[in-house]
Length: 299
Image (cartoon, rainbow, N blue to C red):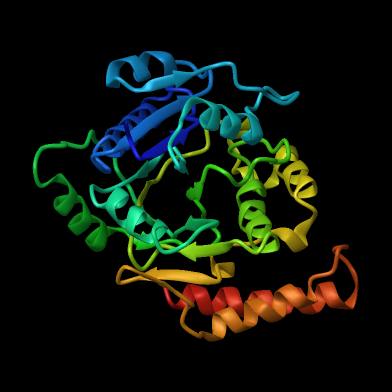
């Protein structure tokens, strides 16, 4: 029986480039370890056919909001009900995983109990089908180091956690802002460890446009994104990978190294009020601006 379940809610496969990068991603997950189960969730165009083509399980009947967008709560519930594995991994459908992924995650998971593991991504423009013949991983890593770049800590593309947590999730809209930030916030509030896997795991985000969204605009300004942030408790609960209180480095889970960026983020968290107005809000935004500029300088 597989020891890890990777699940995702892909976009429709109607756009040729989205189709290409999602197929690349799914095939990479199939090579992420020897004991990996894959679940594709939703009813998007082409999804059932792709699942059958690659021999992975397809779970339809996902609940949606009034806009027809699948709900994160339903996606996670369907995955939990369909799998007996202790470790669950939600990953966005444009993310490439490498063969050592499962092994690294299993080593990490043996050191902790209740936890949420996340990590930063590398950005890479990919316009071709990946050739998954021997040596593909080393070749792609080399290409990524040459042409790609590390994204900031606000981009959160995968979540690893034991199946007995995150049993209650608000009805967030998938693919919109806010819900991923709440995951980290909620884990910190529950006193679970939030582990930054970035020092140990490389993942590659295949760049794409946002033609699948209303008016082709990026998701941050959408009504559903604002609704997600409200469901999550407001902007003060918008956490990112920089809010992790552990990191996995050289196979060990330990406290993250001290940095000025982490210190500034701690001050920022203390300052953020519930309402986006007033002196505290202004001060928190000033601290955030300094922190973000420092983070950009390190990329």
